[in-house]
Image (cartoon, rainbow, N blue to C red; front, top):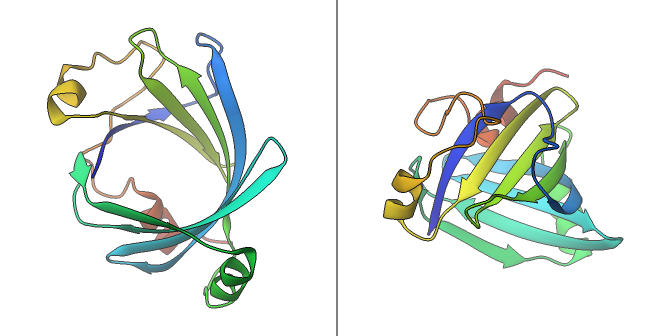
Length: 151
């Protein structure tokens, strides 16, 4: 189960300690339900995942499975568009949460904070750095971006 809140941002923050940085490449085999493949390079190590996300906004089912490089390459060839490229930076927030900030295709930024419970998510007070919350707004998922982007 994934419990997360999503916010629009306009830059990577300098207010919080940086925990790590990754480069992601991802694409969608299907958007309803969201079936995504992703490669992640972190500290020179590449990994590959298949992710299936159910319906929902704040709370939704998420299943992730490891892929081999060959499986990722073969699945990538089935995509009808180029992979999305994301720079992900993860920061430590003062309350102990992790702030995941993404720059997508060098076009826009967004941030997410994951929580262990719905109560924790609802009790969270966003720091001033975070912009408008879009957790419940339609059209602000990466699957929606995949469907609507132009090349």
